[in-house]
Image 1: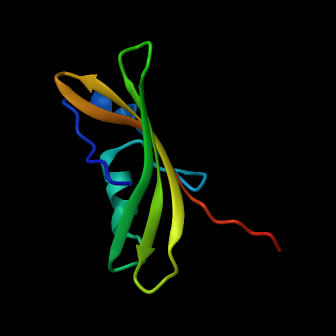
Image 2 (image 1 turned 180 degrees about the vertical axis):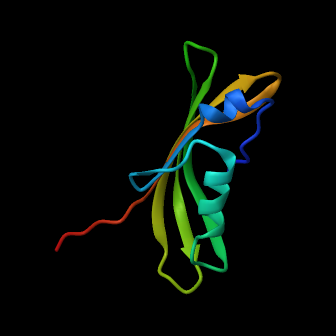
Image 3 (image 1 turned 90 degrees about the horizontal axis):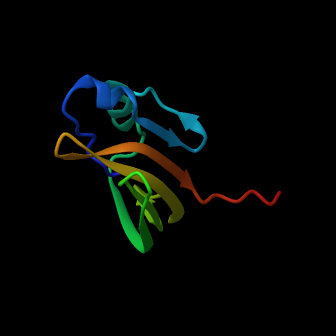
Length: 107
């Protein structure tokens, strides 16, 4: 979740959506930033292993990123992230962002 949520006017922020492992966060900058600040790790590193980007019919950009995260002393975890970028008032705004850790429970 590495996007800075930018937009001119509150109307663009009201339409933003972010989900993290099935949890849909508040559609406002304060809700998203509050979630970032509450994460339990002190250091994190990431590596992007693949990314795909496509234009959408309504002039947005749909992106998918696959990679690995290393937080503190935890084992390396895979992740998937998909998001939509939309040009609103001359600024690219992340309007939808879905993030999921690639955790498998085979037990």
